[in-house]
Picture 1 (cartoon, one colour):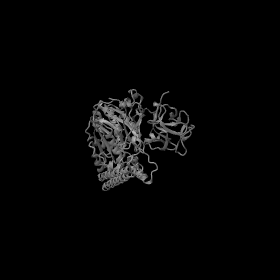
Picture 2 (cartoon, rainbow, N blue to C red; picture 1 turned 30 degrees about the vertical axis):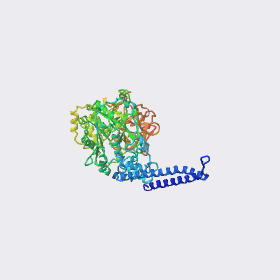
Picture 3 (tube, rainbow, N blue to C red; picture 1 turned 90 degrees about the horizontal axis):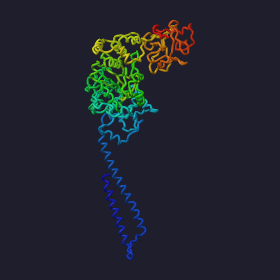
Picture 4 (tube, rainbow, N blue to C red; picture 1 turned 180 degrees about the vertical axis):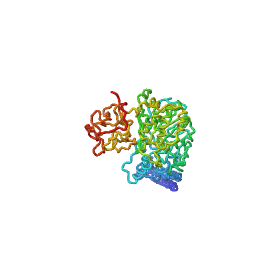
Length: 638
């Protein structure tokens, strides 16, 4: 085309010269000297008119050829510049993109030469910057009626990660999120001007590429640069290829990111301790590897520590849906604080009234008896003074309660900060394999109870049938508590968590046994079991799902879940303290459990597979129940 263009101009010039000559000849023959008027014949006037119209059109066509030549040349040069794609990006092209609007070839070429290009990793698309792209503003991504090949990819993602990796891979690692903060948090001069920087420690094992990168980029993208000293990525001996050399290559472009690797599988607790050794900032912030930080997440946390170095602070943990990756959040009025039950399991509950009275606004930092443990900031020196984590803890579990108890009992304060929001993918199962043969959560919890719970540890041991096993040497942890002159667990219950139900105040406790069937009332009593029928199971005398308490108020409960009867099945319902459907009268002498409002008696079906409510008949063995432990002196006096 470059050769043809001069030829086109020569032809055009020749045509114009011939037209000029022809007009000159005919104009001479048609000139009238009498009136000085030149008259052209009709046929020539028509020809001239056509030429006047044709010449501009011809010129436009020539210019279009010129523009096309230039664009083709530019595009060709771009293609040559982008021909040397990195290995990770080349792998991206193999991913099926049927469910996402595809960019033009030109857009793809531009992206490949950008210095700050999007994700280039195994099984991950180069995400669009389109504000209406998949998952932007935290919106859900749904794959409707996937074909067979897509369904296989979705299933594989669930199997490997216990969340929808396929959907995650469709979403930009720089995706936008809603701003969940109250206006109170955004007020000028709300936080101190000179905040301490932090090192963010993120531990991972076989984490999905897109989720891990989205965690890192959300920290970098939504944190003031001067407040992030470094991000320490601790690889707990991952086996997936994308978390090895490819991760090192990708993170090499971010000077603040450091990847360190455990030579063998050590578990979350020891991986965090390993990460702490690389921290250079005065504040440590721990995050999980499947999080997303929102705008303004960091300053409120550092502000609380800047004001008091013994403040241990947690963001509000928002839920990222494990299937659609939708970002769910509530305003500060919906903030919960942490608690625990006597299985030594963490739980959430509403901010108690005595804490609400301390505040003028719901967005102010609230005191919390415990923390969930995955996401928090702590002054490095204070963390070390508290003895960091118990190095005798294995893998994970119980470390959050240990840190919570000793923070409060040894001179610190634990807070939830409503101005700070971080999203977290909550998985319904762990996708990782652990070595079998040891119940690490129980072992950790026993170490925790031995050091921090004083005489109240018996309530946990009741739940596990007093089977302590080998929990290791805790003498160094007891010495730490003594050296720090920490307060008693009774003080903690009285001052920090007075709303916790104390098993020692129960009239009866243990299993609820029907001797006729050798069946016991049985339920895991977890959040997902609420509003469902209570079950039965052969009595095993090991506590756990068969451990119940009868309160002075007539509640048959396990922690915050109570037996409730409203005319149909006996179900679990959150304890409300108003008696009614949750009021039961236990008679230890005739072994009956009578429902207060209906006056009917608890029974077991003839098939021994269901709890029933029947008209009371003391001669019926299906209505006879015994609590394992009973103390009539604790009954409420009328």
